[in-house]
Amino acid sequence: MSILLAPRRNRQGAADARRAVLASRGRFWEPGDFSLTPSTAHHLLGELEAHGELRRVRRGLYWRGTKTPLGMAPPPTERLIDALAPGPGVGPAGLSAANLLRLSTQIPRRALVAVPERAPSDAGPVAFVSRATRTGRAEAGLNATEVAALEVLDDWNTVLEVTPDEAARRLTNLLRNGSLRAERLTQAAATEPGRTRARLAALLAAAGRDDLVARIPSPDPRTRQSALATLDAA
Image (cartoon, rainbow, N blue to C red):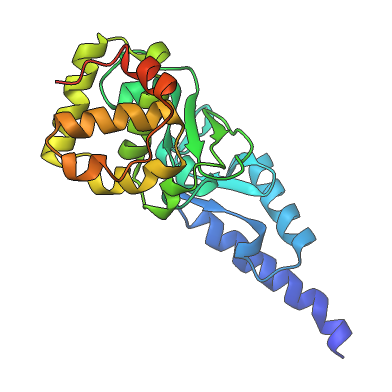
């Protein structure tokens, strides 16, 4: 008896899942969201994508947004990042980081995002870079702006559009007004490269946080000298 009823239950479950997807807006869907066998769930999502009711982000992940004459609109970049790389310590890298901090007007074709673990596969307008050794970012609970600051301090010589002096002043002001949480950045600094630690310590000193400078592990003198040569913190 149970064997004969199973197909009916599967059909009903698939119909319920289809209705749930079609009734949704602004959310991601995965096979695990349904009480269906994996093969049935994959088939259902693939069928809905083929009919323009979902947009495939990558294997096993689909977006249900707003339908347009050109198809399903893609998910907002922020929502996509949250779905693919959730948790603290995630934030922009490279020119994306400099742009967020208003240190550059350049907008890269693909948003570059640093994650404190193995990087997920790139998807749509987002590319990921692994910062697996920089575990302090997650442990300190850094937000995206704070991650961006560390990334800029690391790539100081290549991502700035403003002068180094202006960039240092802007970051120092963010530390002073609390937009960048000095204590959290100090906690995260232990797993950052030496040049990043040296520049962060200089900015903290300029922001009047000498109490935190001593807590940042000092890089070797040559690294410190090289890092500070292009940093003019005021």
